[in-house]
Image (cartoon, rainbow, N blue to C red; front, side, top):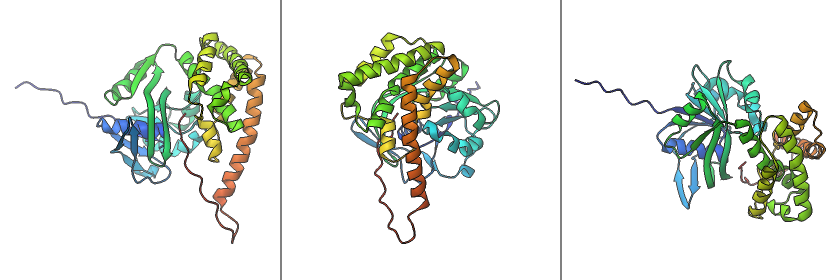
Amino acid sequence: MPQHPRPAAPARIAVIGAGAIGGYTAALAGWAGLDVTLCVRSPLQRLTIESGGEVRTAAVRIVTDPARVTPVDWVLLTTKAQDTAGAEGWLRRLCGPGTAVAVLQNGIDQEERIAPLVPRGTGILPTVVYISAERTAPGRILHHVASELHVPEGPLGDRFAAALAGTGLRVHPVRDFATAAWRKLFTNLAANPITALLQQPIGIFADPEMAALTRDLLSEAAAVARAEGADIGDEDITRTLELYATAPADGGSSMLYDRLAGRPMEQEFITGAVVRAGERHGIATPLNGMLLTLLRAVDRELRGERAARDAGPPSGAPAAPAAPAPPDGS
C-alpha cells in the first residue's frame, strides 16, 4: 500500500499585543486555521474585526499570563516600539529551539532592539508593515486597507511567508530591505511628530509653509538614509509629500493618538532613529533634532501624568474618568 506523507501541522503562532496590527494579524491567522495565541496585558472578552463592512469574531486563544504559554514556531511582536521591553516576559516563555520572532514595529533597528530580550540564536525577522487599521475599543479592530508585510530576502523570510500562506497577509521578501525600511520610516517621519506636537490632523500639511518645512525635514533625513546604505532620494521626498496631500484631512497619526490618549509616544524610534544615525555618520540633523527635543518634553509630561494616574487619586479624591480608546494604527 502506498504511503502518503502526513500534511504539515499548522504553524503555532503567538502574537504579542492586541492593538490594531496585533489584533488584525492574529485574526487573519486564526481564520486560516493556524494555532494562534494572542498575548495581552489586560483581559479581552473577544476579538472582533470589521473589514469591508463585515464584522467577524476571531477564534484565537487570548492569554494574559506568560506562565500559561509555551514555545511556538513564530512570535509576532506587534507592540509599540516604546513598549518592547515590557514584552520580555512573553518572549522568554514563547521562544524555544526553532522559534523565530517577526518584529512588526516602526523603526529601522528592530533586530538590535529585540536581540537582548530573546535566547541567543533566536531568528529575528524585521518586518515593514503596510496595514491601515485602527483599534476602536479594546478587542475591536477596524481594518481600512492593505495587508502587506515586507521582510528581508532569505531563508527566514521564505519560512515566514510559508507560515502565513493562505491567511490573507501577503508577505513580500525584498532584496534591499534597508531601503524598504527607510521608505516606511519616511511615511511617519513628518506626519507623526508634527501632528502630535500641534495636536492637529493630517490636513495641516496642506499649508504651503508646512509643506516646505516637511520637505526640508525629509531632505535632512534622506542624507542620513543614504549614509546608512538606503537608496533614498528626491522621488521619495516627493512621494511622501503626495501621500500627505492625498490622505484624509481629518486623519491622524499613531503618535497624535498616543498623545491625545495620554500614552507615551514613539519619538525615539521614528525621529530619534534619524538623529542617532546622523550622529553615527557625522551628518547634522538640526530639524529632526529640534523635533526630538520637543517630543521628549511632551513625552516626559505624558509619562508623569500616566504615573500619577497609575498611583491613583489622593485619599478622598474622586478618580478621573478614563480616556476613550483612540485609533491605534501605525
